[in-house]
Image (cartoon, rainbow, N blue to C red; front, side, top):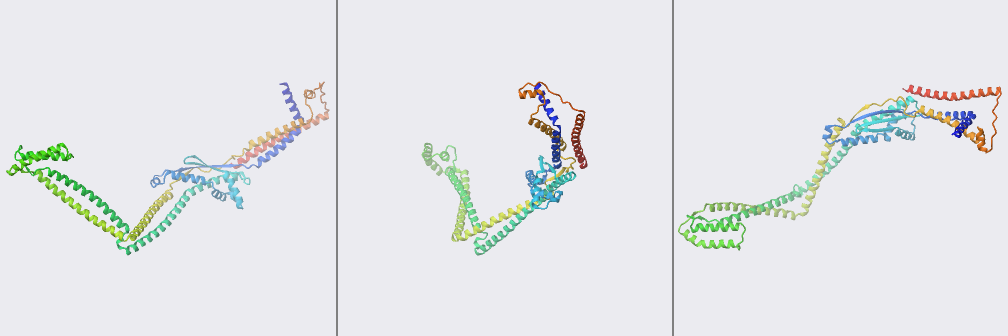
Length: 505
């Protein structure tokens, strides 16, 4: 611990012995450092905040969604600091006064791009930060230019949002109108070709597709008639089966042969209706029973027994109606087959004309559909454009207008001045201490003894004359004066800095 203390005292003594060197180095470092700090221009920052209003019920009704508008806003935010927009900012502010060549403009645009920030604080709140630090401008001019830059960026944002939407919509409508005009010419040419073709082939009026449509409609109707005819024939066969199992007359008594024959025939008809085959044992037994009862029933009928059966008469009426329906359907089927054969023959007799008619008609239909679709799209675009431009689907308001900076945001000049002072003092002390290490001098007898390894018997104190003491006091006063002057210069630079800030405010 004592050795450390002695080393510290020796270092202080070495620096003190070379205090003029330390003071000179400190002055040199401080003057150079303060000059560099003075050459650093002050940076003044202006900030503004804008709020984007996205809600609009009518815009959403016509298909202008929030996502579309957010995408437009993000595009505008990203392109706000483009080279073209920054050039507009430079030319409209004091920055453009010194621009004389395209190369100088490019350099100015690059500098300005690094001094502008557009930050999205929330989904619809943007913060614009603009910094001006031109060395050729005064502090007041830099503060004013920073505010002008922020204001110009807001103006560009408004122009990009409104005029940009109008320009894009106008270009889109012009493109759609050009496409409509082209489609209209093509459609008129297709109509002319169809008209000429139909004059040459009257049977192909309305295009060969008319014949094809008629043939398709005839085939469809024929399929329906055939299905109805099959159903009618099936119903007629069912009625015939019921008639076959129903007696013409009813017996007079319940136990007569005619009544027994009727019951047996009814049972046989019921079995057949259930789907039993002729080889089924029950069907064979019923058939034998009917055969056995026919002779007694005939004798009974010859004797005048029984009355007319109303069920049989009703079945006969139903059969006649269904038979008429089946005949009508058969007649309609024959007529449709004849029409279909004639249409087919007409197509087969001139297949090239039919193919040409179908091609002309198909081309016309495609062009017509495209024209109608473009017409509808144009009206939708026109409505969307009117809503965007007239109602301003994307509205915004300036929450905080561009501020007028009162103090520079950079550099922190008082802190830099103090830092230079401390570095200068430290550099001076370090230089004096370094020189002492380069020369073989010893501040204490102990250090001399440790270095040489020889015993030191004692030390002789310095004895000064009165003249030497006066000279030393004078030199010491000059040294303290030089040190105080360095501190005074530091305080003066601080005062100048704060006075300049006060002049800007």
